[in-house]
Each structure stands twice: as structure tokens, then as C-alpha cells.
Amino acid sequence: MSVASDTLSGAPAGGILDRERIIAQPGFNRWLVPPAALAIHLCIGMAYGFSVFWLPLTQAIGISERVVCEDMTLISALFTTSCDWRVSDLGWIYTLFFVLLGSAAAIWGGWLERAGPRKAGVVAAFCWCGGIAVAALGVMLHQLWLMWLGAGVIGGIGLGLGYISPVSTLIKWFPDRRGMATGMAIMGFGGGAMIGAPLADMLMNTFKTAGSVGVWQTFLVMAAIYFVFMMGGAFGYRIPPSGWRPEGWTPPAKSAKSMITSRHVHLRDAHRTKQFWLIWAVLTLNVSAGIGVIGMASPMLQEIFGGRLLGMPELTFNELDASQKSAIAAIAAGFAGLLSLFNIGGRFFWASLSDRIGRKNTYYAFFLIGIVLYALAPSAAHMGSQVLFVLMFGIILSMYGGGFATVPAYLADIFGTQFVGAIHGRLLTAWATAGIIGPVVVNYIREAQLNAGIPREQVYDFTMYILAGMLLLGLICNMLVKPLSDKWYMSDEEVAKLQAKSAAADAGPTGSFGIGRGGFDGKALAAWAIVGIPILWGVWITLQKTAALF
Image (cartoon, rainbow, N blue to C red):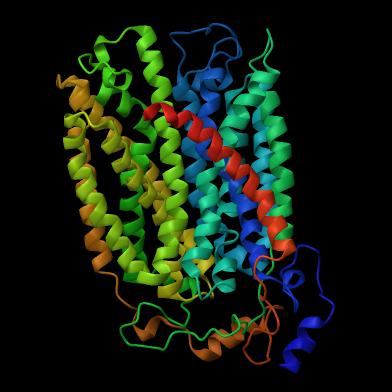
């Protein structure tokens, strides 16, 4: 113990962003790390809410009325300064977000493990906030290509680095509660839009003038706010020294059938295992089923229930007049907001539950419950029970969020913690894949059903059965996930050699070293308040909007 203490109490070496500068010292409270992660995830989570800018940006030239150019192609839309953009042109930014998120996480995940979470968090802050600032310039100059480059590409890289920056750090700080730890951070990504979208709406209304829709000013203000929060989060990161474990905690006993390993698989070998690709398929199928619904939540509720949302069950969607359609659109916006709450809550609830029942069993629950709910959703719609329908999709979206929050701990259980951040980064290519599959399946089937003359209130029935089938495939993949063969694990000598290269390594004994102690003391309460107050504000705004549903 004295050797460890002497080592840890020495003056940290290296630059302010270097890994060795963020090794925790005796007396550090591990509960300060999750709010640091939340500070970053709440900012980059606004990627989910960028659609709040689409309609104002479609009138950036005309201001009060769109300037439509019927013959404008996508290429000409990138450079036009005289025609207003279409929503479909702007929607590519959303696609770029998640393609670049998965790509950046896969490409730079290994670098993050070497450089440490602080440096990755700082780079993420500059990319995400700098990208939004470049997008603001694109709006000022009315150059869509600048928006794609800024928000989509540069910002997308920031998304990837920011998303994975705390994952392995939190797993190492909370080996006794892996699911809960990653759930706390990753729920911030789901909650970012809940805070950012109403904030953006308020700012656009503030900056709107007769000659401006107020978007570029809003971009700059939000970039500044996000930069402060993300830098604060990055500088709040600390990593435990090698050999650290929570006081009084003992690693689970080794078992041939155990799904939790205390050994480590090298990054170069992880993707060569069958288990990596099975978990990749599990995440892809779970996310595909949820992300398609997220994109169509508002029109789906409107088209299925139509006049029932206004207390006029005799009217279908096509029979509503313009004012009635406007009224149910507002109600459907509340539905989308409620789904975001379930998405956020599910990230924490399911990830925490996985600490008790295991990661594999948690995914069994996702798939089995999801199959039943998707199969029964058309019946709830035909019964006209909007409360039951909303509750069903709330549970489905909670499992969508829970899938994201649980998978880092699933990877740590199977592959160990040494390279879990980088392995998680590579696995996020599943997200990019699902971001294409889910919306394409939902949108294509909807259009095909409409073209076949199916009534609007029934066009989603077949889609629900297809999504249930996707979850069945995911269930089979999850069943096939088994513990790894011994041949994939690094030897103790390999692990020691790797750790010896890191300034975070410590040759002393394992133990708590006086680090990580304490619960919610004054510092922890202050840190949690900084991220908790914006979350509560977002929840309050969302609940106000969803009241009309009931």
C-alpha cells in the first residue's frame, strides 16, 4: 500500500492533456467522473435534435415564404445563393452525423486508449463546436456544402470521439457497476436533444428578424455554450491507476461458463472473433428496429389515429382540415418528446438492470419484449387505444436506448477492459449501418403500402411485423454469443508489457489506494447539479408538450 501511495502522490508528468496528468490521486471521488461524461454527452446529443433547424432553414432566403426552384438538383443546392433549401437537402447532415460518428469511433478508438479521455474530449469539443461554427458560416453565406462540411463531417468526427471518450474510463472506475456507469453517461446522448431543441427554438425566436430566420446566430451561441460544457467535462476526467479496484470489491470468481472475464483481448484480435460480429449484429438489429420508428414517430401517430387525437374518432387523417392537421401535429410532437424521455430513462434503467441479471439476459429481454410489442402494436392501433399504443412504443424506445447503454459493458464482459473503448468504437459501425437500414425499411414499406392503396391508418401494420422479424434475428444472434476461447486472450506477460508502456501503470499491489472513496459529497453534488439542472429543465419542457396526449 505504501508503494502505491508513494507512486501516486508524486508530481504528475507530461502535458496538461496527457494521460499521465489525469491519473487519480488518493482522496479522489469516482462519482465525479459520470457528470464529466454527461457534460460532453448532453452537448453532442443535440445531433438527435438538429431537425428543429430544418423548417427555418428552408426559408432562409425567403424568410416568410420559401423561394422554390423546381429544377434545383442536389448538386446545385450545395452552391445556390438564390433558392431555399429543401428538407431532404438538409437531412443529409443527419446522415453524415451518424456515419461519421461510427467511422470516427472505429478509426480513432485505438488512439483514444493511448491518448486518454481528456485529450479525446478536448478534440471532440473543438470538432463538434467548431463544426457548428462552420455551419453558422454556411448559413450566413447560404452555402449548403459548408453546412455539410461543418456540422456533418467535422461535427460528426466530434460526435464519434465525444461519444466513446468516457466509455472505457467509466468501466474501469465502476467494475462493480459497469452497466450503471455507462448508462449514466450514455443517457446524456439521448437527452441532448431534449435540452438542446427547446433551447434552439427559444434562441431562434430571439434572433429572428425581418431579414433573418435566426439560425446562424443560434448556431454560434450554442457552439459557445457547448464548448464551455465540453471542455469542463474533458478536464473533469480522471483515470484510475493500474491495479485499482473499489474498496471491498472482489472480482467475480473465474468460471468456464462465465460471461464475465477478468482477462483481456487485444484490439487487433477482437474483430477476428465470432463474438464481435454476433454482438455487432445484435446492436445493428436492435437499433434498426428503433431508429426507424424515431424518424417516423410524428407522422405515424397522426396517420394511425387521425381525428381520435382530437376526440373525433369518426375522422381519418385524410378527412381532417388544415387547422385540425395542425392541431394533431402539435400533439404528435408531444409523442416524439415522450419517446425521448423513454429513450433516456431506458439507457439508465436497462444498463443498471444488466448489472443484476447480466448483459446477455438483458438483450434477451429487449428482443423478446420487443417482438411481442411490435406484433401487438397493430392491434392496439385498430382498437383505437392511443394510450396503449404510446405506452408500447415508449417501452420499445426505452430498449432502443438501453441497447446503446448496455453494449459497452457487454463488450467489457466478453473482451476485458484493456481495449474496450477502441473495441466499442469499432462496434459503432453497427450504428451507422442501422442508421441506413431502419429508416429505409420503415419509409420504403410505408410508401409501397400507400402506393398499393392501403389506408393511411393501416400502412404501418406490415412494417411492425417486419421489425418484429428483425428482432427475432437479433434474438438468435444473442443466443449464439458464448464466452471466448482461451486462445484469444493475451497472456499475463503481454498485458504487463502493455501496461508498462503507460504512465498510468503501477507496479504496486492491487487495491483502492485511498482512491474512489466517498459518495455524494459537496464536490460531487455540485458536479451533478451542473448537469442535472439542464436535464430537469428539459424533462419539464417535454412533459408540458406531452400533456396533450392524455
